Length: 83
Image 1 (cartoon, rainbow, N blue to C red):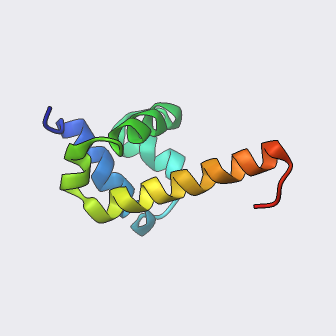
Image 2: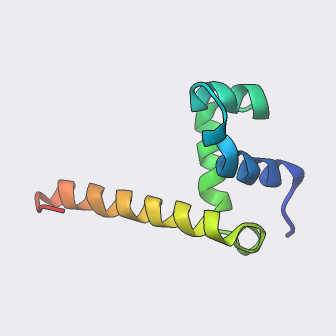
């Protein structure tokens, strides 16, 4: 299934949000009309799609790496072992 306009907007926002002044959560609401929680849910699903990978491979790779590092850190903390 090809990316929707919303999917493309989310990827574009994520790629460019650091260039905008202000808090990210405020920008999510203002620019995309989504709650931050919903935005992150959609983004998490989106970065696992082939279409998102094709649209912006560097961004998707970076976001997957960050997600995976956070997951490893959570598992390490839960098991009591150092990172």
